[in-house]
Length: 442
Image 1 (cartoon, rainbow, N blue to C red):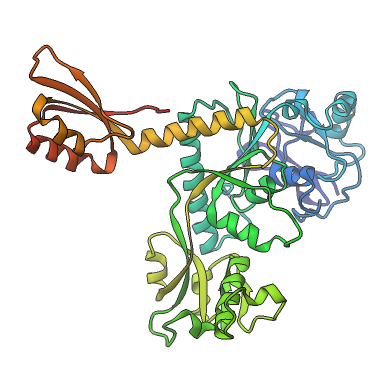
Image 2 (cartoon, one colour):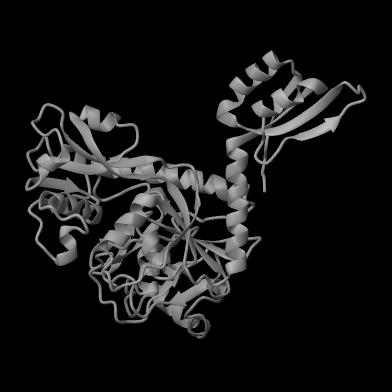
């Protein structure tokens, strides 16, 4: 029977068919007094964009009625919206539904929220929720990886003066100082949203973009365009085999069982290997629809354990440092792709000028993270030698001093090389060498 169920922290959750629905009340001791309802937003956003079926989040409730969700960081009713395709159904006599009916006129005016209509949509990688129904070693690894990706992304946004506040567990955040809405999505989904033109900008890994392209039918156009290398999130998609096994080269795995989370890229890789074995040099096996001899199996978690458990003869998986693979008794025999985080955009963004502004700001933040400003004094006759050591990004800035025999030099130097540069400048005869951090650059 519908009712209520006590939740952690003394709060209550709506219950439907004896099960707690994924929602909660905030600052309200009794769900019957709650004027609004909160729901995990990402699946609803996907449905709104028309990219995945409305039952993708595995809810078992009737979805053809009128449903109410809150979709913004605001706590008032101005951001309620109507999802006729998907959500959790509220029982007919529910106080929540009655509260929703009271706002129906407003909802009908905001089927597509006015706060998003005029905003540039910017997809940001989201980290996993603080809890999950199923946890595996790969889940934990993915969570850590996506958490790092999100942390680095948020640092870029902060350095670019993109100001926002994201409420707990809501996947939409409105930027305060620009007409931008941040949409927090899994990194693997971002190429789809940007490629379909549903989102204007996104940050994700090159591996996810290539996997999206590999799994997109040839007749479907992919609109995602790489704008900027973000210089973080380095990793490699590698072919791994048991260290003590008999497989030494990639072609040894032709016809064997391979497990991976990147099925599209893996199929493409082995299609080319098999084509080479058959003497085909101007294409791969997938071009003519030939069935692969190699058996590719998808695993969403614990890929590194597949060989030890006898599920696979080899795997294709992402590697950062390689420590996890070594611990699992695996070794790399080839690299499928190298990857890093990139900024991508739709080929038809809603506001190209704003896209260019965001890209320019992020580019400046990255330059500031990679470079420092080196200043020093040098005798005039040693300037040619010193400027070879510190050529700068374009050219060093040289300023005259009161002493006619000396000059002051300012130059941007790569942060990772600054210690060596200072040694060389000192040996050259430079004095008063200073190193200053750069907050931003254009």
